[in-house]
Length: 154
Image (cartoon, rainbow, N blue to C red; front, side):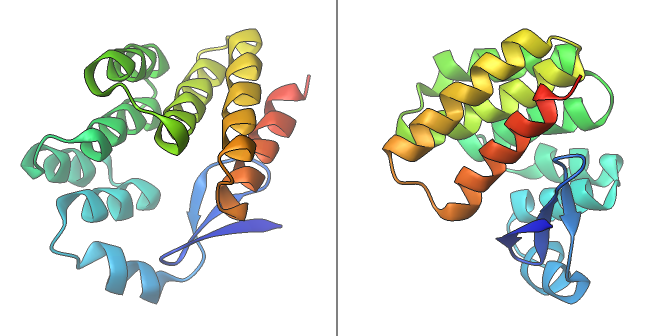
């Protein structure tokens, strides 16, 4: 089972990572977008971290760009750096509601990658609670449930 998150992307049920499920949609909606963050997402999911970094460098500073910088660090094998980035973003942007839930889930994925399963599980539970409370789209709720399942494995 893959969770469809739109724009030709999905969440892989085994890894919890974004994957391409429809390359033509990724190309049309993300890779050739005028938005640097969209192009960075396409590059990240394709594993082209250098292109993702270049696109993020060209993007205006905002919450989405900053979260993607944390994801870039995690995908590059630097989960501790990603944890610092995500933690700082709570102070920089003071996200509320579904944005906060999304940032908490990204933090949890970095914690899990760094080997801190206990903190990852606590944060994933918090993200799921926020998403349920704020009536997030179904794919966001399913993503949180999936990450909880993955992080719960021994």
